[in-house]
Amino acid sequence: MFRIKHCFAAIGLVLLGPALAQTPPASTAAAPDLQQQVIDIKSVLPKFAIPMREVGDRFQNMYYAAQGGNWALASYMSKYMNGAMTPAKVTKPAEYKTWASFYSGAWQPVEKAINAKDIKAFD
Image 1 (cartoon, rainbow, N blue to C red):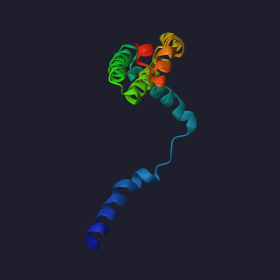
Image 2 (cartoon, helix red, strand yellow):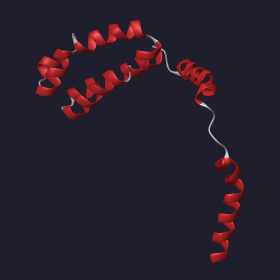
Image 3 (cartoon, rainbow, N blue to C red):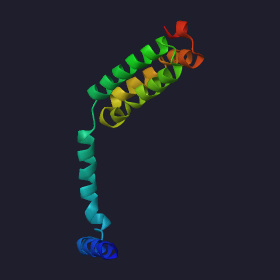
Image 4 (cartoon, rainbow, N blue to C red):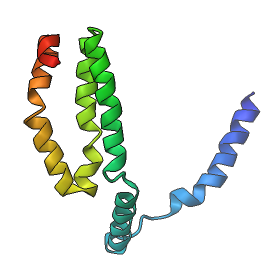
C-alpha cells in the first residue's frame, strides 16, 4: 500500500510539475483576454425569455403553495422568482429596470400578504 501511494505521488508530480512551474502571464497581456472572456460569458447568459419562464414557474409554485397554506414555500418562491431575473441585470439592463420597478412596487402587497399568511389579501 505504501508503494502504491508513492507511485501515485510521483506520477502526480510528473504530470503537474510543468504546470506548477509556469509563471502567470503579465497583467497587461491578460487584459484583452480577460475582456474577451467577459464578452464570452455575457453572450451565454440567458437574456430575458429564459429568466421570465423561470419566473412563471416560480409564480405558479408560489400561488399553489399559498393556496395550500404552505407560506414558507410561497415566500421562498417569491424571493427566488425575483432572483431568477438576475442575469437580465447584465444582458438586458433596460428591461431589468422595469422588472425591478414591478417587484419593488406593485409586487409588495403580495409579499405583505405572504408574510402575513393572509390568503384573502394574497388572492
